Length: 539
Figure: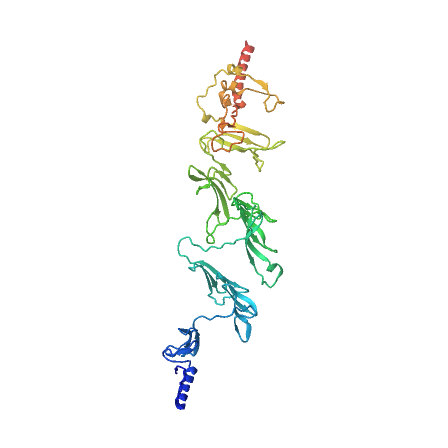
C-alpha cells in the first residue's frame, strides 16, 4: 500500500529511482491508504484500506465519489452509488450476458422497466408499478401466498394438492371475503350473460361428452338494463350427456323454477320427460321419528305459520298427514288423513270411518258440496254399500254430541227411507183429541212454477202461509236476505268502483218447507172426516 504526490522532482539518479518507484507503487495500489492522499488529481483512484472502500476523484477535484466496497473476507465486489446503463432494446438489452445477449433488462420507455428473454418481452413493470407477464406465472411453493392491498388484508393461499384458499384477513365484524364477477358490456339486453362459473374435467381420458362442461352457474339479464332496472336471474346448469344446460333458475322476483326458466309461482317444479315430484324427507339418524312440514305464513312479516301440513309416522311403515290452521294465535289440527284411509275433519278422535266434527257457533254449514256440471246430471254425493245386503244407514243425524241419533237416511235393495226420530221415549205431553180439520182448511195448496224453471208447473205451498198453521214444517223467516257488502279501504277496488259502492249485493235467504210434516195433520183430518161419515151413516 502506498501513496505519492506523483511529482518527480529534479534530483540525482538514486533519489529519482526511489521517487519513481514510489509513484509507480501508488498507481499500482490505487493510492491505497487509511486516509485520502494529500495531493489529489481529477479522476484519480483511492482505496481506503481502513474501510475497504474504493473511491474515484470527481472531475472538479474537490470531492471523492464512492465507487464500490470490496468484501475482503469473502472476496466480493459490492457496487456503490448509481449504475447508469444505455436504454437498450428488446433484442439488445442494456444489461445482458456475454453468452446470451438477447437475455437481459432494458428501458421500455419513461419509467418502464422490461425484462427480455429470447429477444421477446417477458415481464414489464410500468410507471404505475403494474407487473405485466407475457406468459404463465408459477408459484412453486406448496405454501405460496398472494397478498393484496396496502395492509395485505386479502390473501390467496395454495392448499397443497387441492386448490386455493381465499381469505379476508380483516378481524373486524362483517368483513367477509368478497368475489365479484363483472362484465365490461355497456348495453345489457335480455338474456345477456353477466357472469358465469363453469365446472369441467378436460383431462378425462374417455373424451367426447366426458370433457364437456359438466355444470355451471350463470347470471342472466331478464330484460334490458337501465337506470331503473337490473332484473337478473340465476341459472343452475348441469349436463347429462351434453354440455351443461339450465335445469333450475331463480328469478329476480324470487321465484324458483326446477325444470323451467319461467316459474309460475314461488316454487315451480316441471318434470323433464317424467313426473314433477317434490320429496320432503326428515333428517336425523336412521329410525328417527322426525316429521315433515310444509308451512304457509300469513304475511311477509309473520314468523309463525298460518297453515301447516305435517306428515308424521303413525307406525314403522305407515304415515299420516295432519292439516293445521291458526285461529286466534293457536295452531290447531283441523283434519287428519290416517294411514288406514280414514279422514278426520275437526277431530283427532277415531269415531269409526271418516269423521267430520265441525263446532260452529254461527248459522253456517259444516259441510258444503258444490257441483259445476255444464250439462246433464251430476251426483253431488254418492253413498255406496258395497255388500248390497240388508238395510244400510247412509246418513245419521245426531244432536248434543255423537250418539244421540235424531234421524237417518237409510236404504235397502229396493228403496230409500228418510227417517226422523219418533220413539215414544223421546216424547211427553202426548195428546190425541185435537181439531185437525179446522187447521187443514187454513192451508192453501196451489200450483206454480219456480222463476228459475219457468216451463215446469208443480203443486205445493207458499212457505210463509204454512208457517202459522204447521210451524214445524217451515224453516227460515219470510223476506229474509243476506247483508249487503260494500267496498272498504284495503279492498282491491275495480276502476269503476269506489269505497262505499256495493261489492256484493244482498241475496234472498229462502224459506224452506218439509211437506212430510203435514202428514200428521192430514191423517188426523181423515180420521175426523171418517168419524163424521160414520155418524151420518149410522143416523
